[in-house]
Picture (cartoon, rainbow, N blue to C red):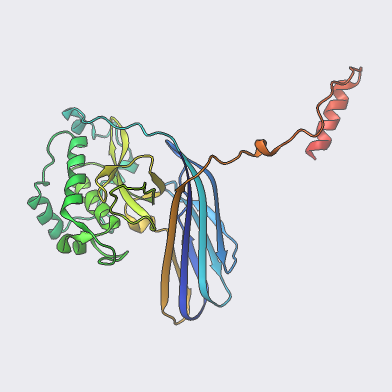
Length: 322
């Protein structure tokens, strides 16, 4: 399956600002069944883009705009190929709990067992776990995570605007409302309390016609990946009560949202700012390979052999490479 993703971010300022510095994590990852086929970013005002890979393996672009500007627009476009997912089994054996040990886990996994900025224990989280019988997981880890996924989905209403990007999980826990970011943080905090490494996934979701997805089709999406030694990373989407599948397009992973915001930046100036976002994810055709554009203009002829043929061909090759 091929998808075309278009992600536009626009910042408007009440008065001109200068020296905007911005970091972008919008490039879909290439790993597992997901393969990035093309990606490009444009900015207005135009700026020089630089890139690096962070310690989670995410592609990070950054740039600055030195001249004064009252608006900054960032547009990212990508084509992604996603192969058919191999669905996990319905359950694992109970010995899976014993496999969370030093033999099967690395330092990267242990880092995802610790509290992080947005996914951390709190009295409100403890009360929710007690209320929903989540203090101690029941059954094998995969079954327990599936139950947790469903419990969060049923316990909270999806409502945009009731929390912000920097809201702690207490806001969603006390109000019983939130968005995908809140639900992902709650699930991560609980999974880690069970001793299961869990990470935050930022990306996109393709909304099929007539699906019952609660998340909006015109926004980025977030879900959770939990590490099971027998299976590897398994994705859970508590917002929609489903497993991550070929509709989920992964852009970045981290401990929580603080590690993977699609945009993060600052500017110099005294101004109020307005943020507008537009996202579209649509099925598309397979991109044409570069070789498919080529047309043989002159067929290769077989030259008559001569004593100096090897030297002649070597010289010709050298000329072509130069």
